[in-house]
Length: 428
Image 1 (cartoon, rainbow, N blue to C red):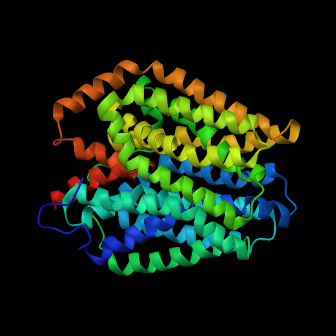
Image 2 (image 1 turned 60 degrees about the horizontal axis):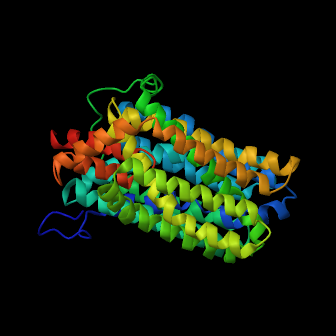
């Protein structure tokens, strides 16, 4: 994808760069806490199970909020939703840094998750509405922000965490405050969509088998994914900055293969076969971590290598939802986000309980089994995916392919809203 002929991708209005900067900081939050998990456990005298709730509270609230973000943005507008989300992140990230108890941080991470859901649901919509180069150019910018944020999050978390475990929380609060001020002053409001989204629409959409199949597959994949993120740092026994570099390498691979590897595999082999292979390899890597947990170098190598297949899985599962969904894309994104993040939220909590009752090997083995079950669930949706691939091939490089490209760029569902907002802006 590229910007329109004669237009430079980087010659954009200030508003675009303001939102893109906020996107980088927002996506940093995915891996920001990984390098400081052992430090938080030590400083606050908390068990790994208690610390895992930093993921659980954040992701469960994000999951539930996904059901409401479309409703909110369709009533108050994208800019107001974005600003509200940014403000929530600033406040709750700062409060997490000030907290002296693990329960306090867990609670403030929940508020952070609410803000992040509101921000992600509307950020791409604003970039699409303001960027030069059309939808494809906006997607390139968003992909760049997403990739930079995912890769930089663990590194920034490690660098600041090496000073103090509070550092990453305060760092996000400061950076998001800058983004908030820039958004308020530089971004023009968008018109609200003509059709208001109902809160119940995403729940009703899950009655469609193809959408539910993809959601359950993503839930099981996220079970393994967030088990790895939440508990792999402990057996490595590294400092915060060393963990930061490990997950920085992981994030670089994830971002690169999300953008390049996944589309290539989809074109060459199709969505379903590519997902079967990537999910299976991911399960094997998690299983190896579970078996060789005592060997830090095996754990480090498997975590970094998992970035390749995680990037492929994230992109292809998100894209597949849009390909097979029988409902409007914003509704499908909300329903899918709700189901998938339920898995991401519950997995670290369950893994912590397994560690408390058995040992640290067990959560990884269970995570690998969950991902394999996800592959089996996905096989029941093979026909809709094959039909969708055939439709994409028939459409070629133009037509609705830009819409699908938007889903490649957005792992959290904002692209679907961006498509709707793009149509609103076109008809202003």
